[in-house]
Length: 198
Image (cartoon, rainbow, N blue to C red):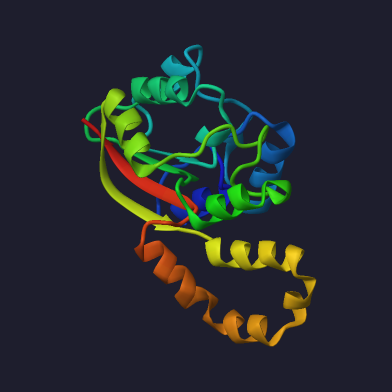
């Protein structure tokens, strides 16, 4: 489970925490940097019995987009959790201004549409369908991202003069507000959902 900083915050609020990270370097870094327990492990059919019923909240930040079979992971996670337990997922969102920018300029793909690192992008509807299939309902969803920054950065590759331009200087102080407009139109490049096991 990624975003080890989230474990540190949860721990500081009194939660018992455990991180799972198959990469030994990342697991060691998280334990050392954030002072949280991180095991070099992952949830699978072989480890479900080890974790079943122990964790009322499971978070997966930047996990499902890297997996060849996200449904398989959700199946294993749902076997661990019981009714009323919470699953928090953050994944790249489609459609988004970032993905449209990368589709428009395919030679400059970098963050969202980045095979082989990102194998999947998720619409909120597809995520809802996957979660429902595994016994979850979405209670809350947030769309957010770096779309405006990415769009401006990509345009700067085609028009290098833009990088030092008055246009960029004028837009830079407004990036947060312009991103909020994108977020309000559900075109952000990240989606975070809080789902409940039913």
